[in-house]
Image 1 (cartoon, one colour):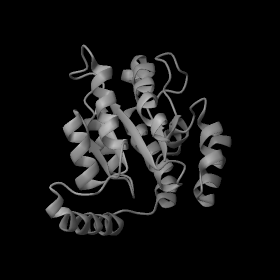
Image 2: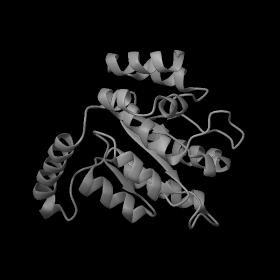
Image 3: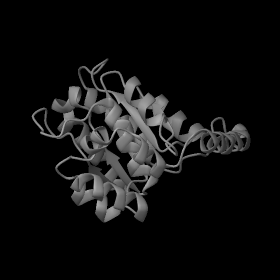
Length: 213
């Protein structure tokens, strides 16, 4: 599984802590971690929580990533922004129980975490435990197990509801503020990571034109 990490500007100083925690859990399980930034608080390409959501939509819908790990100070803003995108199902994850239940019940494709609120002593251990509950083993099995069938049915209904209420991603990209879009895809490693992994040609071509404009 390709896991994309996106860090918001107010929490960019913690980028290496989050990245190291994610890699230490995900890579031994056979997953790839692609860090789309921010990398430091001094990065020229600055990502707001709104841009995080837009970028999550681009990565999921282009199939450049299978799962997005992101967040902000509380995780709330990024979760809302990500869930405004077609095809993105983002949960707010604070502790390992949240991670386990989100993986088993909702089986979404993105999480937002708080990297300021409650981010204290041994925070990296909480991150590792959350990632382990998400990425070790099969997701979507249900909890409790006897409700697995109805949970799977509800996930399908939610996907249909979102598809009915959202435009497709290419239409979104053409409709949003183009300066905002250009800023969201301006990261120093975006070109290297995205175009090598994106599988939706129209989305990739549009992003290429935006970056070149």
